[in-house]
Length: 261
Image (tube, rainbow, N blue to C red; front, side):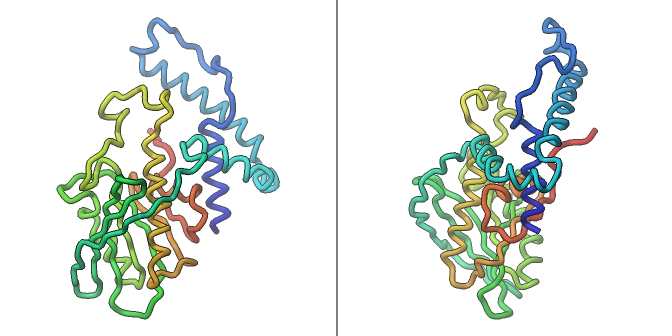
C-alpha cells in the first residue's frame, strides 16, 4: 500500500517540475501577460501538459518507476529543501499538562524540531486497551484560533482515540500558538521566497519527521503502525511528508494535489 502511495506522489512531483520544459508551450505577449490572467493560465496549462507527457514517459510503468524511485526521491527532497537533512538535535519534549476526558486523555505538548524552533501539539491517548497503540499524526491545516488549529479539530482526534489509536495533532506554521508565516506568497506577496530557495512546506515536513522521532520515544506507541493523515494543509502535508518520511505504514491525504476549476 505504502509503495503504491509513494509511486503516486513521486509521479505528481515528476509532473510538477523534475523535467526541463520548453518555454514556448503557449504564446504569451510579455507586454500584457502580467495583466491578462487568462493568457497566463493558458501558458501554465501548456507547461503542465508538456510536463505531464514527459512524466508519463519517465515513469509510465511500474518497471520505470522502480528504476527511477531512488533518484526521484532524492530529487524530491532536494526540491523540498531537505537534501541534505538538517541535524536531528534534542527534541526537549515537554508535557505541559494532561486533560482527562471520558474515553481518552489529552497531553498538551511542545518540542523543538530545530534548536529554539518550537512545535506545539496535543496528543490524544485512549483509556481502553493495552499498549503499545498504533499512532496517527494528524495535520489540522491552516485554520485560525487562539490556541492553534489543533483546537479546532478536536472531534477528529477524539474519533481516532476512541477507535484505539494514539493521535497527535500538530499545529502548522502560521496557525500555531507560536506564530510564523506559511502563506507568504498568498497573503504577504513574498514572491522572492522561491528564488531565495525557501519553501514553507520544508519546515512542515521536517516537523512531521521530528514528530515521528518523538512518537518513537514513547513506549505506548507501536512504531510499526504509524499513519499520516489530515485535511486541507494537513492533506497536502500528507502528500509531502508521506514521501519524505518512510516510517509511515499508511498515508491518507484528505486533499488533492491540485485545484480543478
